[in-house]
Amino acid sequence: MASWDRIDPPHFANGRYFNPGAEQARGFVDVLRWKLTSRAEPSPAWIPDVVESRPPARVESGRWRVTLVNHSTLLLQTESLNLLTDPVWSERVSPLSGFGPRRRRAPGVRFDDLPRLDAVLLSHNHYDHLDLPTLRRLAKAGVSRFVVPAGCAKLLRDEGMAGVEELDWGMSASLGGATVHCVPALHFSARAAFDRNRTLWCGYWIEAAAGGAYFAADTGFGDHFAAIARHFGSPRVAMLPVGAYLPRWFMGPVHMGPEEALEAHRILRPDVSIAIHHGTFQLADDAIDTPRRRLSALAAGERFLVLANGEAHEV
Image (spheres, helix red, strand yellow):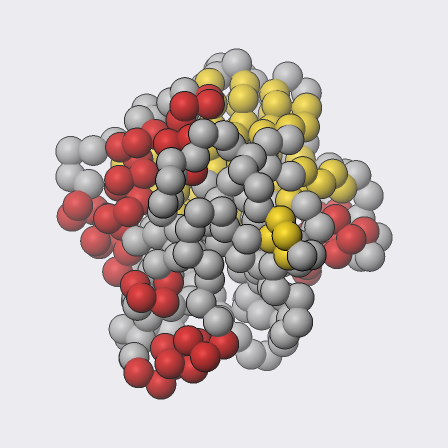
């Protein structure tokens, strides 16, 4: 793979998006092979260890306050700016209400305890990241700004949501005193059988007076981390995915494991990294807490935190 020299390399052709200079997501035949040849690690049906927290209405300290709600849902607060990423409060993340991955832990923040939000950032259209029931609740509660990757706006607008802004890699949006930059990720998109890669996937770099905050969302490991670091410098805080990584032959192109997340942390050199995409839904063969235990063992002495649902960290 050649090193990227930009954060918006060509990534669209013939009506579909792709991962430039990298492996693509596995196809249907490989899905069957995975399901027929491996067995998921067992996890408890329910883990009652969540201590709910109530975030402040605003943060005025000039620092970043990051609260892990669950999975990839984070409340990011700094200098009178409240952002929510990939919000999921639903019981299942699936197109079918009675089937699909069910949550194993409660959200760490009650929906009704959320502060007033300035915007919601969505990284791609998978059900564990773009959860329409939760988005409808947010819109009903008064959220009027949604930032989404290219092609995703129609899904929200069809639900009657206003204030939806689409970004391609390399584009940005102003949010009060901050700027949100859409940056690359190595992943894929799909919500149905025939819409694969018709919409984009991304991460976000939030540029604010408190420093940069990098939300990597769902991604495999690749040269985009070095490209982002060259373009923006080191963030104050990086939020890096660590879960749904087994088996590696299948998940490797689109999901990092703890080892790769730690390597990304070392490339980005943030003040602190926070693990996301773990601990709530079992989406692959790794058990619900395997990523947490593996990262904690690997990252001893590193500034790479594994927060519990509801736990916050300021940097």
